[in-house]
Image (cartoon, rainbow, N blue to C red; front, side, top):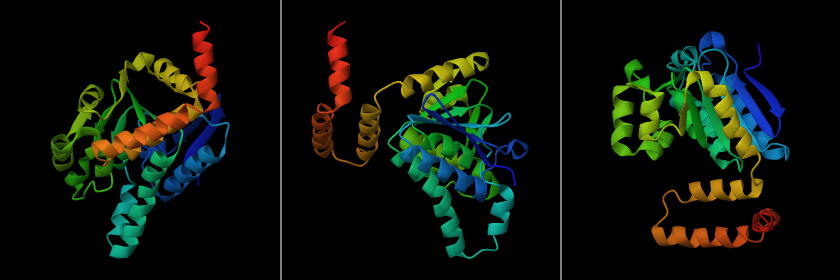
Length: 252
């Protein structure tokens, strides 16, 4: 079996390339295992500053492997629950990782593939890319991915996308909050690369605090959020990165 996720590390950027181009990078069990291993390596390796996810070939990912989904119809509810939690662990791990995770999306990011992209902290898209959750059109429910979808776009748009299965262009996806930035296809590699390299050059400590606070604010009340923010603010002032960066700025 060929390697499901091709991994390279250069300049602090750990790139994971979904590698089933003949299947439009459909996500199967070996790919889930490979993604979890990728995030584990990123967490443990101090040389990794940023994780970048992309797809081999024309598409980012068409979603879950349909052959595996079809086979699951004969499994027990508990077996299917465990399988769902397995892919869910990828989404959780991406959010827990104290380093930025960037999705570089070209072509289609559909269903679970769209969920994987939007589980990332930053989504950079080529203008010709497409996003959507067509599960309902296959008699299925976009259950796991709704956790990212609802948080990204709000209830009304999330229900529209999940219930109709309609696809969005990259520009439309950016307008509703699924995508961070859109670049012309011809400029995508250069401009997306600039963003990833910029993140890799920033303070790892500041980025980790920023990411962790952002997601911990989810569901918090306003006053509780302010208290959390004060704690993060106070601790971040004591880090070597803060001292060095501020001193360098004041010398300009």
